[in-house]
Image (tube, rainbow, N blue to C red; front, side, top):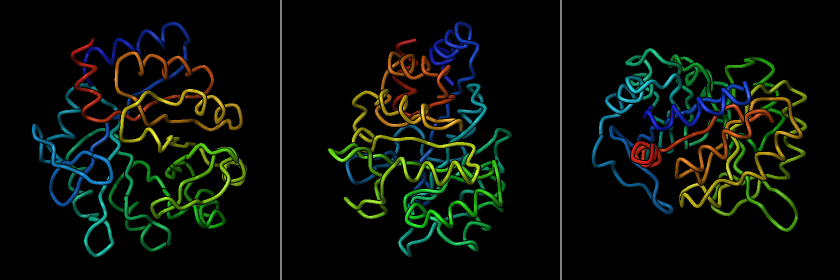
Length: 254
């Protein structure tokens, strides 16, 4: 990772003695790296090959990679491409499929890619009973992504379709905690793609209600944003997802 981001995290660790790691994200569509813009995605101009992008983050000192596979035209996820990236690096990979994984057979194929952890996302959250069974069966190899939409009714989970609702965040958190979930990726979806500063209050609230590790995502755009998120390490935020655009900004700011 860029030196500026290492300095920011190192300073927080020295002051709080709490663990905090950056998880650089690589989003893959087809055979190329993309980044999200609005409701779509555009190819990365500077680094198009997923393996090249993953190896670059590894060489910069990253110890984890967050690999996101886009939905294919047939509605599935290209797990062969995911395996290609995972086998090329020597660091741990946290894999997620935007097409969604909500059945045992597909989950087993995803875990067979060699990923250190697989994150269940929006489509799985519509069946919390199944999520809880998977967590109980696979333990720390399963993480849960919690896409949160703040509303007047309190924080709600975003569903798999645009504008859909998957239920109350706190009720879902209770079910998943009872099953033994070890890690959540918490994202304020209103800030996910516009890099409009992270929702620190949401991260604090989730940490107050769970003993599981929390990975922060959404709205992280600058070195100051990373410092603000890292300052929550003593409360349970032990890492942050960072986009390639964010890391480029951090490198110039550091």
